[in-house]
Amino acid sequence: MHTIISSESLKYNHVILRDQSLEFIVVEAKDYFLDVRGLMKIEKITGMSLVQIRSKDGVTNLWFGRHIFVSSQ
Image (tube, rainbow, N blue to C red):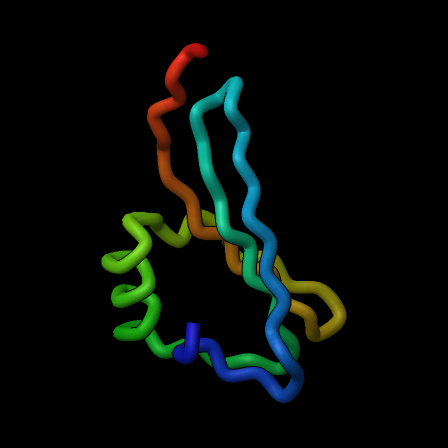
């Protein structure tokens, strides 16, 4: 996540929606800029795609997501 430059430390959450077989990493950054090559590298390493960018009051949330296999136990 070194590609996302921020004036403050980054925050992130890992979210799994088992009933929908989806997994997300949500990165929160303030005053950021994006390097497209870096985002592609994140996608390659995590196997997740950038699915959404939300911004409000200078705070941006970058959502990376993918489908996961959930085994029934």
